[in-house]
Length: 164
Image (cartoon, rainbow, N blue to C red; front, side):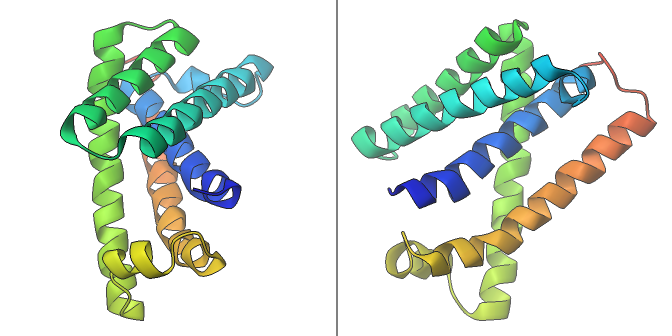
């Protein structure tokens, strides 16, 4: 996994997962970017989860046990950075992960339907290339739009400090 992959794929994934987790946690104030401390917390959480993600991916593969370890490491990092209840963050993270995976699924269907390139072909033949990153961008745009809609909906409904 090269640095370009880490910057364009891992960092964007970890950022989306964090923002979704915070939205489902009901902690809109952590997404108030007029507060400098929020930038620092988001940056710390994203950097730490990206490091753990890359290390776990490079050294352990993707077996079931390591997926659980990865989930728990992300939750512990979020608890460490945001000083929130473990079980609330865990619940919010699992829902965020589900929404993220749903976005990946629909993004894959759209990509395959429009380009004829399957996820398997993308992973095997284009991995580590600029083409891979260019093919992932539409999926990230859809995910960012979904997060924006969720954020707007949560803001309009006054979901500050109300966890799910």
